[in-house]
Image (cartoon, rainbow, N blue to C red; front, side, top):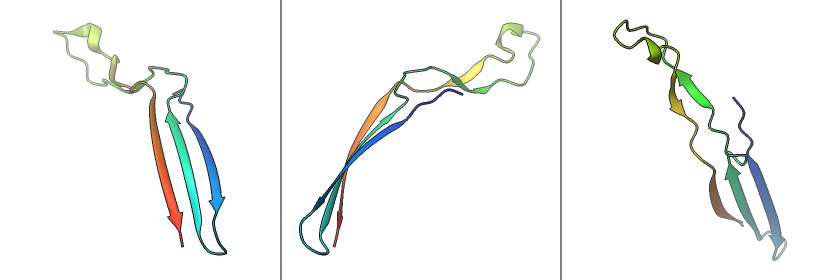
Length: 70
């Protein structure tokens, strides 16, 4: 499996105990569509499906989040 995830984070201090953290997470940055699991059962009616990828990694996705500590 070839998955490359990336996170960028910035910390802002407002007082002695108040902090704000902004995060950007990017999942599957290289957009590699690797199979996550493979069909292990053999079916003579459909032999080409044996060991074919059952689930493919989803395309890249991003998440923006904020964390406030006090």
